[in-house]
Image (cartoon, rainbow, N blue to C red; front, side):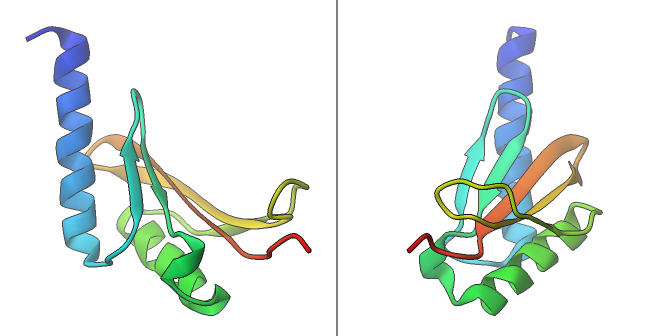
Length: 99
């Protein structure tokens, strides 16, 4: 197995283990080429519920969530960046909808 393929397989396995440990349904998970990306989508609950999910996921990844108020299609996000099983993890959810 090539090193690139082996790294991708490791990320996919780590993503599956992470989600299993979190026990949270309905997440959008993407094991990218060099990180695990997890979105708590808008339909997963109201803002406090989604913020709590990000906090729970962040705790598993050994980090703290923080708001990001950069302008864009949502005008606000909650982000967290950490590590799980040696793999970088990025977690986020939108917190405000654009009018």
